[in-house]
Length: 417
Ligand SMILES: [Zn+2]
Figure 1 (spheres, rainbow, N blue to C red):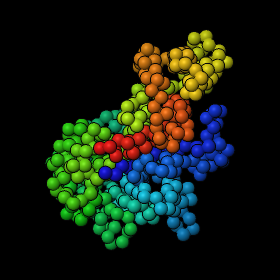
Figure 2: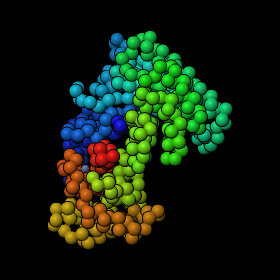
Figure 3: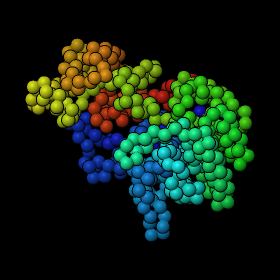
């Protein structure tokens, strides 16, 4: 089973100064050239088997430029592997897709995602795998019209139209890839809105000649529904490879594998590093821990709350320094857990979170500090940065914690299944 990490332009400064919270000079000169992807940090074991790069990145974050020979480039790189800074002999693969969620609210995919243009981009940028252009057959769409949020349920007829559009695209796509002798391997994506409609898509893709298929639009389904769809479709694709888009169901990986799934992608463990309270850091034993919040004292909400509590800016900065230093000293064995915890909590109180009471937070933080899971982690990030990985503070700590989670998932969770 291969695990792909979706690319969202996440990088960290390898020379970030944690003591002074400052970026390196070379980051200041050129963040992209200087900063590292997760696969550049991990030298011994990679945190994933490949990267899923959506062409929708070219419509939002990255702009394609053309050289004198009319060759497309991203940040002066003509090859996606060079752009992602993948080493020459690395086994990491790059899979391209359209990122169909970015245009899900459109009636049809924008012209940028035409079969010809998509196939040409996979070819020009030398992707290893290229997924046929699709349109997701979702149950409803959300969009803004004249400044107002709209929520529209899609009829079965419309969902079927989207599914059929995807099937037609996949046929045109594989024919084009064969005709032009493009070197990337074509993956045909099946969209659907019920087990039956997925079966129909899969049958079409197999008859079109695909050896590698993918199921899209699955995020909306529960584990049970997902397994049901897989049970129904896999008998029609014996001997073919199968990718699941955007699905991370850790408890069901073995089931997926038995049902013929050969790869999937998800950024969920990466994002948990800063999204969910209580599940920010995954230990090698598979236990989740809360990261400890020490936000920057220049945070606007914090300043407002401090002001409301008659705390001066200087005192606020002192509380921040005290909280951070006490964590470092605790980790070095120079301070007791109760003192460290009370410094953190005193500062944390100013965050005034409505969702969680301070006693709950205290319990979670105590567990993190008592267990010190970063000390037992053999990944390069924990080895090098220690407790800083566990501190919820700024992108360089938070993303590193996300990289760690991904590494643990790939090298501990997946390998133990
Ligand atoms: Zn680690």
